[in-house]
Length: 197
Image (cartoon, rainbow, N blue to C red; front, side, top):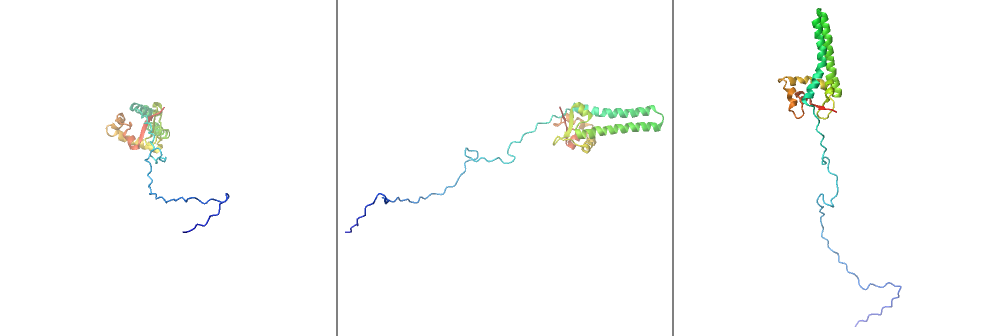
């Protein structure tokens, strides 16, 4: 028989030994894979949408000029050079001297040509409006961005009117049923005539 030696009494200021030692067994946790919530859920991270995903504003459809207003502006633009050239013909009829006749006719025809070049190429190329288009409230612009053409592009468009006249003047009638009311020269030069104001 074994005898346990007596334990000395504990004083209150000495720490008491634990009555029992807690046994903590290591717990085995199964690895879990994180599954993000479906996109758009209440706890989904908010990321900006990729470029181009936002709905782009649709530009308003241009107010294309009517066929009648285009004819009216062409008549006004052709009237002034026509009157000036007619004065040259009047000089031909009134004079008997061939040199004087040719001189007068040449001056008037040159003035008519210079006016037409200024009105339909320079003025229309820089502002979009010839005198006729200004009177009729229309403007010639590039179809892709609405800008003015400039002198040389406007001159090329004037020369392209040959395409409008060649097939029995069909190109001049084309704006009557065309969606953008373009003539053949407008289609070749990528231009439209729109209403302003």
